Length: 300
Image (cartoon, rainbow, N blue to C red; front, side, top):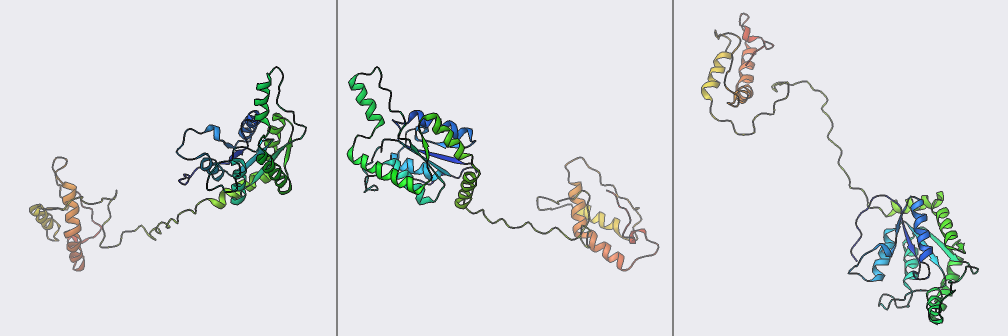
């Protein structure tokens, strides 16, 4: 079966039991899981699948953080599968998988004083059918059930129930216990994939001051998104305007309709020509030339 997709960090509870004999009991347990603010995983919620019942049930165990096993008087269906050489029931295989995974396990066993099926008003044939639902009739299944319940009673502190309602209360109490939730969250964290290593962001610059020959623009101007060509005459005119002995005045106005490239022209000239020109001017300043003053304001 393909691996399960990643899921959100929530507590999923796998409910494992035989079905025909414990329908009312399972309904009580599902309600208890919901009251504990957890999510139940049960076969009856699933639709048709390309996988076998054994594969699907074991996948539910693998998805859960808590296994809840309920054992009555039936052993359950034993799949004839090469992966099940010992002829175990699906219910026992689910328990074995939970043990192998090391997940938190809660076990509940039916009390010997639990009432049997209600047979009043039934025909003899109907009585036999009801008994077959509630009791294990196969001798091999009976022997396996006795051995399994004996093992469960020795390996776990089991809750003993004598009615569906009592089982629901026992499950709710066990799920909301602090130690159960702590174990479930620890199990979830243990099997969660490691988070990818995210590189640290680059360190911010130590200063925001402009360092020559870089130019300062407020707001920042990113330059052109294309290769600048042409406008040679306009750039030459700006060169002439920027000379120390220029007589055209300290301000040049570049006028055109929007989109003609005024900003691009000014930025290109500033990047390629203005800095070298001003550096040359500042190296041999003329005391009477305003253009020799680096802080002088220049407009568009």
